[in-house]
View 1 (cartoon, one colour):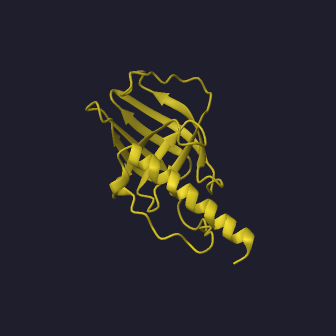
View 2 (cartoon, rainbow, N blue to C red):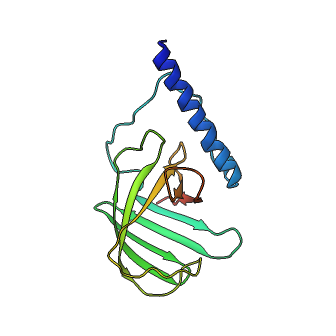
Length: 162
């Protein structure tokens, strides 16, 4: 194994350890079973639907309030959170960054004007909101972060089977 390849494999292991630590802090460790580290980096082919497509759900731990999101092909997202009902347009990168995050930009196109689970109102400003998403290894859960970092995230949202 070349020094460069060994160094890259070590970086992947460190990134995986960081993700598992974040999952532990979020209380989601049982959902993430640590797979064996690959001998070389694997870049998945973007064949078929994007991993974001589908229905996702999260219930806030301290409340009895649930968020439900549905990402459709073609860039449409519908969601409910508390009393809020939204429709948004979204764009997401086809592949994750080297840090394992997908960059997603969402713009609210319709809102019923009622508060979400956090008490926030999402108005129709026409301004996109950029967030960063990281999937569990099986892509059955995701976390949503303000930046390409695990410092300010929420979740995990769990994929609903269809």
